[in-house]
Image (cartoon, rainbow, N blue to C red):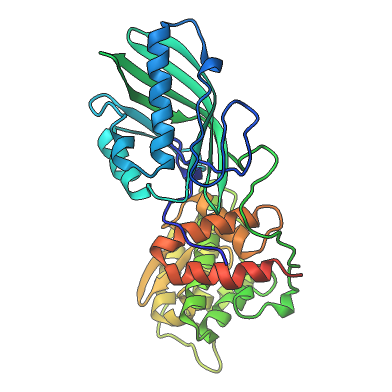
Length: 389
C-alpha cells in the first residue's frame, strides 16, 4: 500500500522545488544511491571563467544545500541563505510567478520540509556574474516515493569572507520524472475503460461528465458515504473551475439540457411540485445559460431563485457550470482551486491513462494534509479501480 508523505508535490513550486531519489548511479555527473546516501556535486564539471576559490566555495555551498535536504536538516538548509538579500521565484503550473523574500520563503519551506525526499544537483556549471557573485546552473532532480520531477535550476551565491550564501534561486521549468522518459509516480498504469452513460452510477456520475447532465447531483443526493460525497463535490468543483475559466476566455462550453431553463419561472412563488419543475436545478440551468449569453441581470435573478426554490438540487453546479447554492446563499464554486489543480483533479477522477497516475499521486499528496480520509480513499479505492479494466 502506498504511504502518505508530508511533503507537498513540487510541480507548483519553482523557487526551490523538491528533490529526487534513485536506485542507481546517475549518468550525468551526480552519484545518487539508495537509502540515505547523499548525491554529490561534480565540482570538476563546473569549471568556468571565474575565481577558482570563489567557485569552490559556491559549489561547496551547493553540496551543503543538497545534503541538508537529503538529511532533513531544516536549520542547516535555511542557514545557507542570505536572509537580508535573498529573492526566490515561485512559479505554478498555471504560469503565474511570485517573487519571495526570505521570510516568505522560510515560512513555505518550513511547512514543506520533510523526510522521504532526495535531491540531486546534476552537472553544475559556475560563472562569475558580478563582484562577489557566482551563478551556478544545473539540472535539479527531485523524488519522493510518490512523485519525481527534474528541470534546469539557477542559483546565485554571494561569496564573501570565505563563505557563500544563496541570494537567488529559480527552477526555470520542471518535467515529471527523475529521467526524461518516465513520470515514475509509483502508481500502476491506468487501464480503466470509460463507462457508458447509462452505467455511470455513484462516484462515476461525477467523475465522467457528459450524457445525463443531472446524473452527478442525483448521485450526490443518493450517496451515504460522507467521504465519497466529498470526492463528488471535489470533482464537481474542478469542473466548475474549468467552466469559469472557459467563460473568462469567452469560450463557454454551453449548457447541458438548456431546455430546462424554461422550467424556471421569472418571479412569484416557487412552483416546484408534481406539475412543475421550478426548482434549484432548473433555475441554475437558466442562470448558467443567461451568463454564458452575457445577460448578467437574468443570470443573477435565476441564481437567487435557484437558492430560494430548491437549494438542495442546486448545492453543486450543473455540468459545465460554476453557479451553485450554499443553503439559501448564491455562490460560485471552483474558486478554491487553481486551473492546474482542477485539471489534475479531473484527470485523476476520470482515470486518464496518460495524465491520471501523476495527477492521482499529486492529489493524494495534496489531500494528505487537508483531508486525510479522502486521500486514503483515492489511494486505496479509487487508484486500484483505475488500474483495472
